[in-house]
Structure formats: C-alpha cells, structure tokens
Image (cartoon, helix red, strand yellow):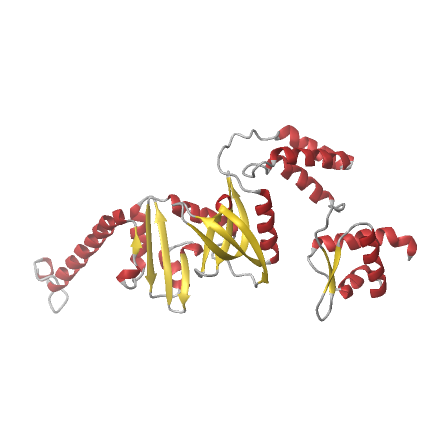
Length: 343
C-alpha cells in the first residue's frame, strides 16, 4: 500500500476539491481503502499545509477549508485550459483585476504541459488580450467571490443594495447565479422579504455577508439564469409594460398569451401575475386577447399603452355589433330578410 501512497494522496486531494464535504466512508469507498487509512492520509495532507477540516454530525466528514496560505491546486487538462482562457477574456467589469489576471496567467502558463501550452498559445493568437475600453461600473472581486460561493452552496446572504433612484436598503436573498452582461455583473436571487425573484447589479451591492443558512434551491422562472437576465433587461429597456393579476393558473396564462416562463408567475392554483413588455404596443394588446383580467387595482403599466388597448377594444366591439346586427336581420328560417335569402 505504501508504494501507492503518492497517487492515493493526489486522488484524495482531488476529491476534496470537487465537493464541499465528504464523509470518511465515502472517501474510503472511492479510494478502496479503510477508514483508518483515510484518517492517516488526511493528517498527511494537513502536514503538507492543506487546511482539511473535520465536520460534525451523525456521520462526520471532511472538507477542504480556507487557510492562511493558498496550497497547490490540482487541475485536469480541461480545467487548466479553461482557466488560462478565462484569465485572458473574463477581466472586464471587475475592478482592478486586469494586472492580477496577467500575473496569474503567466504563472499558470509556466507550468502547463507542452500539449496544453500549444492550445492556449493558439487561442492567444486568435484572441489577444482585450483592450480595456469600458469605463462603466465595475464589481468588486471579493464580492463576486463571496456571492459565487453562496450560489454554489445555496447559502442565504444579506447585503445593502442601492437602487437606480439612489435609495438603499438591506436585502436578504437566496442566491441562484452570477451572470456577466458586458460590462456589468448581475446576481440572480430570490428575495425572501419580497417573496419574488429579483435581479441585482453587483456594482450596487455592498457589505455582503453569508448567513450560514443553507436552503433547497428554488425553480427559476426561466430556462436558465442567462435567459432570466436577458428577459429582465429587455423588459427594463422596453417602451411599453403591462402588469396584471389574472384569474387563471400559470400554465393557462402562458399558453394563451404566448409569454415566456419568466413573464407569468403563479400566485396560487387559480391565480397568476402577468408581466408584459414590448416596444410595439400592438404586441401587448394582442397578447391580452386570450385572457380575462383580474381587479382593476392590480393593473399597472405604461399609461401611453391605454390608447392602443382602447383602439383594439373598439375594433372588437364594432365587429361584435356588426355580427349581432347581422343575426337580427335573419329570419326564423335562417335566410337574410333584406333580400337575397327571399328571392
């Protein structure tokens, strides 16, 4: 067993880096050794400077924690290439990270195997370092790191958020994902107090703090986080918006209005909220044709949309009156009493 010690230690370290917590039994099974051997190998890693913590609970376990110094990391080929590429392309929108990224890239490239160095070099020729032309708001790297960890661990966080109008307030959220929409970073999260999904600009977010409370991930009202961000940004930029409570379940409202999942949110089994946005007011008017609307006090939106809805309503009303008049002009036998049917 001793002759396989270096390889086993590397496999153990790799496992600890891929998941937050492992039980001793799980590690022993993965490495095909005894629990006693796992304990000795954990002690060896600690002697080498890796901060492996023991966890409490019914089964107990181990996790790789943060230490005073950064120990060596194990990367497979794909991870190494991905990090090298990301260091050259993903620095925009993050405050003061360009020079740091270049230093990290130089260290990584120095130890890359030749076969991987060729791949990174080919990418560098095709896509040199981006020119930092953007002067817009930037996100703090430590804030991004904290939020990324919270998204990974499904841990609620609190922070102070500044809205577009300058107002600030404390928020408590369940983070879902971070999305970069050049040049800004956005946090997709479920705000607990407001009981709704929200989009937060990371550059407006200060004093983030993890709570230690983990939750079961909620289903995002969109195919993925990127689609959710794209939809919310499109709505924010749209000229016309419409919001209403609808007396129908969410699936029915989506089908009848041809809306994206993020536009319809269930209130209960028989009620939903509908949010529409478009640059063309006719599109919103047409989407409303297939549903009934709830109380008037739940209807909000762009006031300039009203004339288009009235126009569409008048057209439908004229058509209905014409059909009613046509029905009155028919005789009992179904023929038109004004002429052709009586000839």
